[in-house]
Image (cartoon, rainbow, N blue to C red):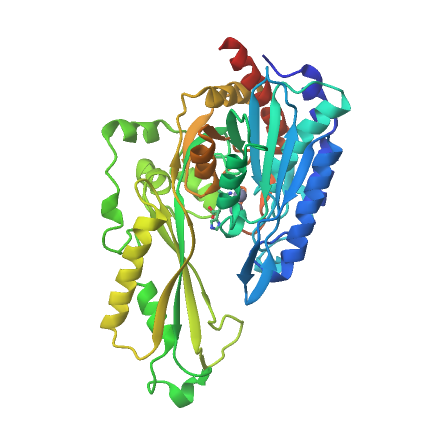
Length: 478
Ligand SMILES: C[C@H](N)C(=O)N[C@@H](Cc1c[nH]cn1)C(=O)O
Ligand SMILES: [Zn+2]
Ligand SMILES: [Zn+2]
């Protein structure tokens, strides 16, 4: 069943209005990882709930409890649940998205204010444009096109939007398990669709059937009672930063090999037929350069590079809290530093089997240093990897939708990023979960000048709507 032609026409005709809706969403600084923006993150949740209500969705704001962040006790942003349609003859699709974003400062290198959506050369620049406000607005656009023209939706819809995804989805897993057991909002869900990742390149739409998990860590090193003058104390005392840098340098090699014993060896080598899948992908080393903004791929071998993202674990060093990082030269010995890093996990790795290996290794390396500083390893958040069955009708519906809108077959990809709730939905509801990305590989999610191409927003909205029609059609086909 192709999408209703009036739905598709409405999307083209109202593109400007849809862009304005995205601009309104981007303007709200819903940075979940910064206590200073917690009120705005919660305000974003309320804004989104109001939008859904206006589009005929029955909604509820669900309290997820509290957290301690930057020394403050804070309310967690609410989960938003929604329900539209209860026709037993129709399939029920659950849509997930997150309304929080990563931090962004213009001084990080943005060409324009990150929280003002700017349209330039058919691209929409702004924090959250692709991750994940654009895709959420895409769903709202689908609802509006149907409501405004009194078109019947082909499926029942359920929504679950959260405001903590960028900092580990705190409180969400337990909440979903509780709601699923209560049998109200998630009752009768037949499949889940998540639009929160990206095409593999800038040309070919993708369908994603795997995600890496994540284990996030901080190595805390402290010693002096306060910051010290390096002229007065240099070479007299154990320096926390020196210990930390040494520890961090022992985690990963320059070629990406993880140096923590037992981590790499957990993963089975790829089979010949699996490597063939990567060979067939519409991907090249030039695509890495385009998305990364420089020719810095770890290898010239396409399969090696793509496997580095899709089927091997990776360890990235993110930053050092407490270190001097301003312009100019300050001759300080910082008294307390925290080195942040994370490991992206692939099956059979889980935070449960990886965290003890990481902790024991760092503790033993620190012991070898005979430092009088104090060190501890903190595991802040994590999520398991996920792989889905692409032969399911949920993937088939999305494939047909992509072919109808983009006139192209999708790439089937595994994503290097993490969306821990994916596995929670798959395991708790026992249904197939599909990742249907809207944006392209060069969107710069989490980075400066994040953007969503206008065509991805508008055609992407059509894909989301068409997918619902294809889900209905496949139900009829049995
Ligand atoms: C893929 C998704 N859009 C995303 O960016 N997820 C984040 C989740 C996360 C985990 N810890 C902090 N953020 C990611 O993969 O980094
Ligand atoms: Zn996201
Ligand atoms: Zn993100």
